[in-house]
Length: 507
Image (cartoon, rainbow, N blue to C red; front, side, top):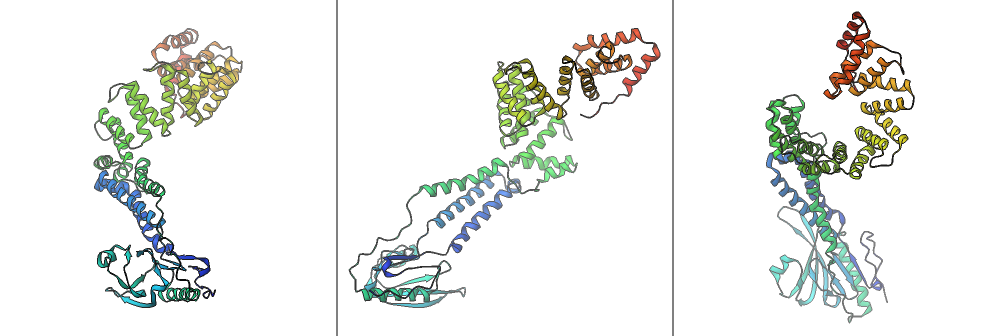
């Protein structure tokens, strides 16, 4: 058996007749262009979502995004389902993208190359295969099927465009080599292989389509936008022009921008540049929360918990705080812990309370750390552990959480660490924490754990009266009455002067 000359086209290896069958696939780059264009279109719609929704509305953006996503999925499926351009076997040659079946070598009378000039001036190479006698062709190409039907053809013309890995002359040479080799074999009775068709497995295509169509939904839920591209209303608000910002914020919020809805709700809640309206604030918080805004979900949960702008509802408060905590808002997790720990509208559940407090504490949330320390100290809901409580208080105190500093001072007093206790009480009292001010006043008046100082005792007792609820008034009055009864008027005047000149330190 004589074999054809070795093929020199390294990007389209076609083997030899002894190999039985070989094929030439399309070049990947031209087929990737529609995929890239569809991906660019979808990416542009996603990153410009805020501006497009303000200009045209959410439904229009969703329609365009889903259309682009569908186009992307369709082009990816077409790219994946590659149909060979030409398949060669010892029985004949097939062009699967044009027709079904095979052109047998014994039916081929000649192979020629022509050029076709189109109206726009571009030139296309044509490979023309002349048949010895007219044959009916099963056209796969829709245009040829409509125009030619089942009419027997004397020639088959193959147009070579950018998807082909070889020119018409090179393809004619390759087919000529096979023709000569098969003729020398003198084996015309070979059975042609079945027509080459794309894979019929629909599962990968369904997965590709689902992923593509999910992209707009993910973009909306994550509020994706161009970094640094801020809606006009938020820009005006940041510049201090609240009056001009409000109409823009309303338009952007109605178009689905969660950040604008949250900003507008905050304005209504605080009455900043607009009449205070708790009901409208709650409404805009709900719109922002529905758009995925974690802080808005927390604020809405607080509105339901307290009953401001909406009916008071423990169930709705828990619902929205749970949503906010799931989105990473640890203030909401802390509130959930307190709701279950104190039984606010629900039955007390220390297991549930501990779950939420631990979640926030693990994220470094200082109030949650403080509450967990108190639970460890009391042994409620968790195993009692005084040392673990101290370490938890220390962690919260390192985050400058003043109540934790006070509780550490109380532990120090119980453990006989008077110096550390007084130092911590002074630090907390200087920040305006009422319980520390009252306890420090009592220690300074007693004079057992620290030097007695009636002037400072009077000062801290008077300041504690401002910071504490009326229930603590008897304790405050007890300290002040002792000072008044034991010091001369000029000393009492100095104590009152210190009260007037005192300013709290920033936490």
